[in-house]
Image (cartoon, rainbow, N blue to C red; front, side, top):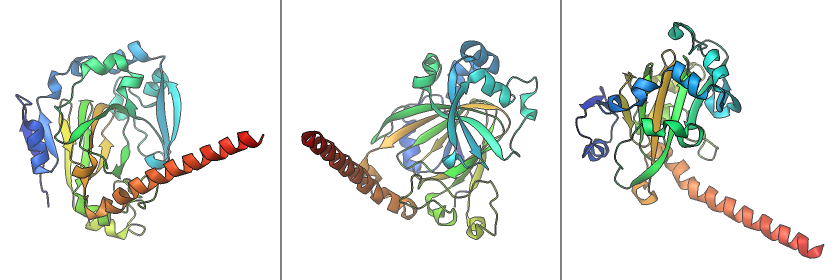
Length: 289
């Protein structure tokens, strides 16, 4: 069992990606994010002044159920006000006890905030992985549903605020109640809370985990298939970068995600076959007209 998170102080990022993949465990990285222009620029006042009138996608979820959340576009100013980011003391305002929560989550920075791309950086490419997306999170105090990343490594970089992260090794998945492998989100847990109801989820208490608080200027590395939940401690702004591991290097995943991994090509080819059948049907319909 992992009992503590390794902490690495980065003076040079050369070779760090190989180290991260070799140990195959989460790592907390100091020194890299602190050099980003975002650390000095991305205050609520700056975001309001630059993008206050811009519509942004915000997830509305009940009972912290992110997987079934509803996405709506709202002006950034309206959203920042709703989470208390513009208050004099924003950390005091929270909707963490409310049944309904709102979260600007996993918003592609290139698509929605292209002006900010130059303010952040990412680690060098990982071996056998290609660059995926970089997304921004802006949120108040709330709990983010337990999940793992099924396609590759990821990094969480905190710009402001704090995030408390619980990390569960892949072999703990048998206690975490994942959705079925043939569902739309097999990488999400059916649990929505930090301490799930023991009557509904009795095995959850057997799961072993390590907990870490990620502070401004720190980056947390997630290996593929590691389960994690994230709790915002007050208003926070963060960046997450994803990589995509090629199919051969993912084979075979740990037992927990294995069924979903094997089902993935079946679903992909079934969708292609279904699309081809519909296309033939449309062509036949035009011929008969």
